[in-house]
Image (cartoon, rainbow, N blue to C red):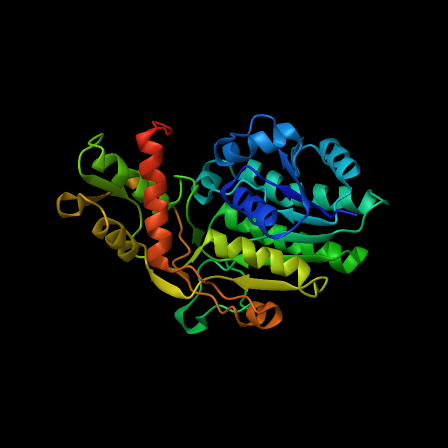
Length: 337
């Protein structure tokens, strides 16, 4: 019988790339949960298959509505669950902390409770937390391993600490096969423009198209990040649920190339056709009240368990991200913000 994967947040960057990976590398059917109002830009290339019911199926569901989650689980009865849906914007969480906590912490609890209540399935479940749970890590604790204490620096990070703990609770209390991940910075095509590298690439594409002056507006450029590609990330998630899954385990996942946000911006500018004319300007509205400024992972545990290694270079990721925004600008498929 064909296996079924349920992806919450299928319309997001990671969810859409994970769908692409599963369609290409497995014979599974892919069921995606999304809100009825979710934008479909990232999954436009899948809509024909959805309409033809060709291995891709969409289901209306909302992490803030327990009944909708029960209906989705009962209808799909998945073999695998990739819980990616979240309020995923750290900066937004400062303005909307309660909604962030409700969606990410209670939403995860509601989803796992819906799975627990369904007697017709016992899926392998991936709960996606975030490296942001580690927050403000002293230099002497770099690289960050799984046992580093949590010191979240935003309501989003607090919510992901809760997400992480809820996932482990269900594994331990209810004998469910739940594993959590703390993915460090990952990016690439379809990355939302609320994230630093994506808004930089978007602004550069607009500068190249002569839509805005040659000035890139920035927030904090000093944060140190380890960069990985979203396409490497989704391959890691597939291995997580298929390579001897261990209930209750938790893993750091991330790339191998580290540099500051400022150096990342310099690289994007260097590959722009307008690089010589671009200047940089800090904008107060783009700064967070607190920032997780040292995000360098130790991924030994996950790599030794699964054999996963990142394969896409930082340079390729940034080139693909910039090319993605060039296409969006060329097709006028974006908002100026």
